[in-house]
Length: 370
Image (cartoon, rainbow, N blue to C red; front, side, top):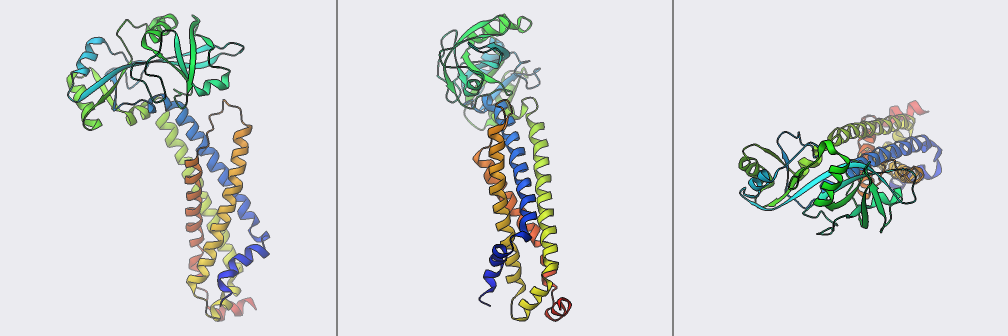
């Protein structure tokens, strides 16, 4: 009986070939889970950083903009109404324009989102001089360096890069944070059909007191419905394609985890059939169903852990080999959630074999095996 706790480990050590197929399949599925999760994180973080970095409680759009920065226009009159809303303490203008930029020494245009601001996002200086801006660090992959003067859009509007900030991408384009005067210059020179006059911005970044939902409601009431105010989380999900991408990838990830559960369940069900005689002998000498199942569970967790380690190595190798344009981003939280998902699937999958283990009768099992 003292040998029973060691039997699952001895079997893994002495007959590893029996577990190779399951380990290889689970390693492949682990790689797939990390790759899908990395793509989801890369798309999400690369598209939403400019909004997530805002130090705001509410983002205010014009009511006809359908939650789009590029379609929204906030005039000085509407801004004054927002500033007078109950609970509002600070208001700043915000605007984006998506363009290509000529980078010194580079032949290909860099995709940039020129972002005009008044209330600085996280990591961005409180003030920016005309014609200067701080760039998102992803633009370094496209050859942008501190001190470079990039020429933005068809009008080749110059912006000098004074530094870099992390995680402020907008719709998978590296942002360049400038003051509102520079943003209007870029917008009017390169998008004359969407030109804005002095004082006009696309949206407002609002800080205030009370709950975010109550603040948003007070702002929309103060503007008599001329605005639509969203909390920061709502504004992030309102960006084009973000919610759809997240939902689609999560469905694929959950489906893959279901496949992991099925693989583990099938493998250990077949393995249990092979062990019927062994289980009969062990029960005959006093082994309980609980102890036998713990052995199965232990093997499943070890296999899942080994598979995850192999899959993690393969996923990191793939990430290193892919070009920078592929939005694959492996973050620690994704590794943790994937590992936990694998362990849960392994536990549930191995539990499928519990029914067979509980029905093993020592006499019949030994007799059928002899």
